[in-house]
Every structure is written in structure tokens, then in C-alpha cells.
Image (cartoon, rainbow, N blue to C red; front, side):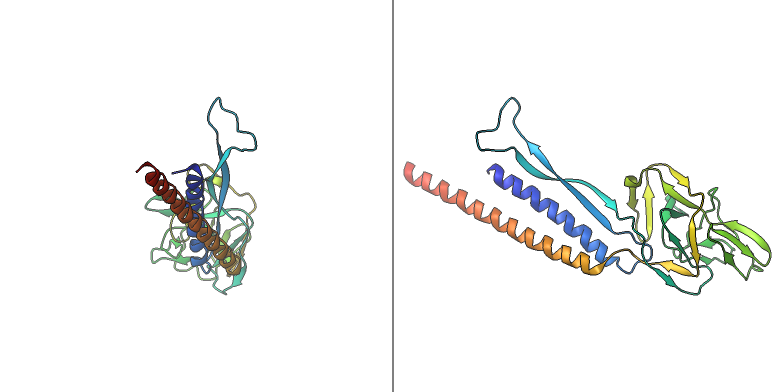
Length: 246
């Protein structure tokens, strides 16, 4: 198999990866707080050591999947009227406690569990700036959440919703549903921008993603046809050589 086919196959692999990411974005277009993923590709230049490129030639450029990162642009705000729904603007994430450890989320659809713990839609406790669960009592009925996440009721201050940023945003990865994880450190946001009675929508733009999907599919089909025609060309050459030797 010639190098041109290997190069084409590397491109097919990159396009398949791009298609998977776009499909996942579209599937989460209506997921609260979802951040679209983007794929970064680059050329991998291959050249034999101690060898110069032939006159008129060039190094072999393979497609290389460099990284997948999150589009950090804000989603839109939708008013819900629910005092426990909160939307976060700008950089940062809420933190929740899960069985797998602390996780990040932009989905602010919170509720109070039977034991008084403030939790997300999956029942994971919401953490304060110190990493502790937030507790409300049955008598806390008039809930007010300020822009910095401080929770006040008719009984006074009951806690504060923590907001953190990842020290290295490139390490933030999806962790299922509306959750994200990071293998790096996080830092508390000093002045978060929280809106009570609203939620943040996904920042996915469906029409843009559909256009990208169609473009990727066309490129995939084109490269597939090239690989097929190249295979036929090679087989034809082999058949002719075999005829000459027989």
C-alpha cells in the first residue's frame, strides 16, 4: 500500500472523529449548560531521517488529532421563575459532589432534597466555596440568591454556592450528562455572576453544527472514493505485472 493511501486513511480517521464530536454536540443542543466540543487537527510531517525531499516533492503530511476542547462561550439565559434555578455567566463552573468525586457543571437546575441538601437535577449535592454541601431547613421558604451565590432566606444567610474555574481549561473533559471533570487544580471565582430564576442553555448552534456535519460527510465520501480508486489502480498494476511475467 502506498503512502498516499496511508495519508488518506489518516484523514478518514480525523473526519470520523470530527463527525462523532459534531453528532454529540447536536444531541446535546437542548442540554442545560452544555458546552460544545471542538476538535483541533494538525499536519504530522513525515520525512525519513538523513534524507532530503526529492526535487519538486514535499514532506508527507498526515492528519493528526491534536486535542478536543470545550467552546467556553456562554449559552443563552432562559427565565424559569424557579427560585432555585440559577444561571452562571462568564467563566466558571458550579461544583457538585458525586460518587466519583467532585464534578463541575454549568447546569443550575437545583432543588432541595428531603434532608435539606441543595442538589442538582441528578441528586448530587451542590458544594459551597469550601467544598461542603449546602443545607437548608424546612423553614427556609423565601429563598434569595445573590449574584455572588450567597443564599439568604427569611431566617438569614444559609450558605453560598461555590463557583470555580479550572487552572488549565484544556484539562476539562465531559463526565456524562451535564457534568465535567478536570485532572488539574481549580480556583474559586472571587466575583461570580449568578442570575436567580434562570438557567443557561446549551451554547450549541444547531444550524452551524448541521452544516459542519454535511461538510465533513462530503469530505469523508470524497476521501473514501480516493482510497477505493487507489486500491483499484494498485490492483490493476499488479495484474499487468503478473501478465508480463507469465
